[in-house]
Image 1 (cartoon, rainbow, N blue to C red):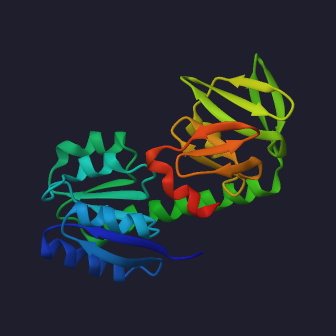
Image 2: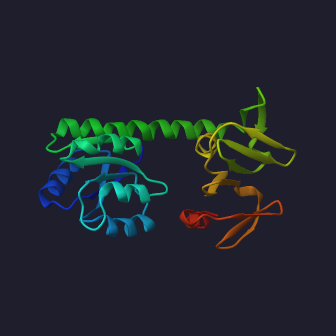
Image 3: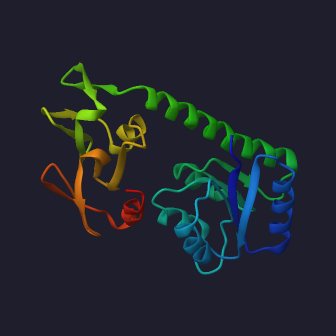
Length: 230
């Protein structure tokens, strides 16, 4: 398994040193950079693939929680702070762990092992998806088999999704996040908060829209970098 690439966003030099020392002691972690504020980190994340962020809460310019809410596709997040009152908000934002300062190496190791376990499970899930060419979805009280090769795009409709295939359309009660987890990432990409498209069905695209099967679908502001992988 490849190493987990991480960054530290922390404005206290001593805290940065402790975290850096801890990271160096863990073979599967690789520290890429450290930042005193979240603004500079945001720019770095636009151009670099990171698996894990160690994030302080009280930062200059932009607070840790506010920064976290700006991330469209956040990597694993481990909060490092002296303030316990943000724990509930942190876990509501799906952070992996919440470390209260001062924390020892044993507690740190427990947190990063959670990230490693989640990464391993995701890899297994991806392998399983790559070996399947279909999924079953609940449609009108029955399970419908839908081939990946027939899906054109998927559209969110509040608590439902509409799946448009080359044969027909299906409506299923689930979120786009849930269906995205069931689709092979090498075949499908989310290009908008409300749309997921099949890469093989893309006919053309601009900076603003993707055309699939004659339908123009908008590209969300937070998904512009998806075009770079097409």
